[in-house]
Length: 278
Image: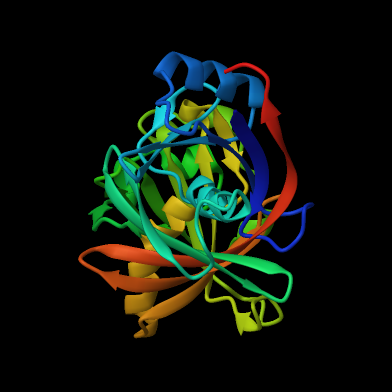
């Protein structure tokens, strides 16, 4: 029996956050072709596939058009799904085995809230001269800084002259190499915006039309990438990030050692079922 569930990650409600479908394949490893075909039909930004071999749980992530090496919100959804399927007890920790290495995860329940903890890799940001690219013209706004990264995402710091949440960005205007992952970020100016009663420190938006994702609602891997920058800026070991998309959400980011970042966020089950054939 193949189980399937959709969870809105980094949100306490079903009408916000980033939806991810999670598929439990039991002790049968799914083929790449089967995973891609199902992910294309489900049309979520990512679908996570889990299976069990010798008591180890493996994970892969697929967008509607390709496989990706890392995905934060679908990993959060995956650990909460394991709890729903009684494969992982609350507060127990397990490592999900991905192509890039082992990812420690756990979950807990507070009242009726499902809360997941995942540890994702970060990477150093490599500065690029703003005027050495045409990115300002592509985005239609003023940028203060631009960085590249080893994971393939580019990161830009938006000028204070612009409001990130109000910025109209056309993904179709983005050119290579920015099409496979662009993080646009800014310090938070709204003191009323909070996650679990903690005021948000920064906001970001994420665009990846080259991966079949025009704008991702809430992107854990992007927050893991930029969290160190904001922690260094604020001289803290944790920060609160927010993503002001049409289906917004946020999370707490903490240093987890050895270039890793711990993300803590809520999730909400939207629907669940079984696949008749897979």
